[in-house]
Image (cartoon, rainbow, N blue to C red):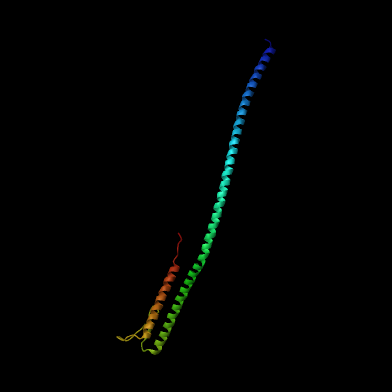
Length: 179
């Protein structure tokens, strides 16, 4: 065998190995392309299913939004009917406050009138107690007059008002913590 024949045999074997390698490569590429095609088809089917589901969900969501809007309209309508009630409650609170203030003024006026009349017309000495109330010293065993009783009632009311005012001041002066 000559060198040329040996080179031809080597070239033929190399070409055969190249052909076998190309055949294996082409089979693998074909197999990969089939798998990619199958995956793309599955993805397309999944996307189609998702589109149908999303369409159904969007219809349901729209229905829920419509019901929510109706519910909010209903709640707002009912709340608007409650506004006069809250206004009336506020007005009652203001009226009660006005009545309290009027009663305080009335008691103060009665006290002032009785005290002034007692001082002008009575022999009973009128003194002021430590709390600011009026104390009328009457004779032992004598029934107090109507003016005396009115003065004592005014004094009691005045003392009660002062105690109430002190309580209110103490309540408002306390530090309140929020939890």
